[in-house]
Image (cartoon, rainbow, N blue to C red; front, side, top):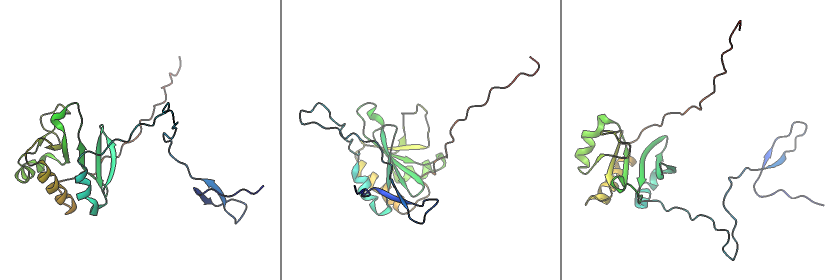
Length: 176
């Protein structure tokens, strides 16, 4: 019986030999069960809201990740935008700009319709939204992507590194 390496295999050096042994590449679990009678159905992929924004940022090689039930857009090491179009809480639908409070005034001159988001319950947040229901929404969103491509320092944040919480060992009582 001849064993052929699969297409996903990657060579891994072996301790006692100069020949690599083949180890299959780990894959994410995906919903692939489908039957003709439709008993098993994979969840349809969610469409990306305001996809024109990603097309505009294509030259900057954006990376997307799900966040808050929306789509976060990263360029290099910075989170720059969140694209939101949800049925619930529609007041914050649109393009969220990652910025800081010190840049709000100057960005508001460039984007008159920009405001703080309401989703976090604070009056002023670092996240600002270009609302989808604004009359100049698409024009403003495309202008924001122009700023991102140009490397405007007012848009984008380097996300904080999250550390996993470690459990502290219970304290011992001495002499008890």
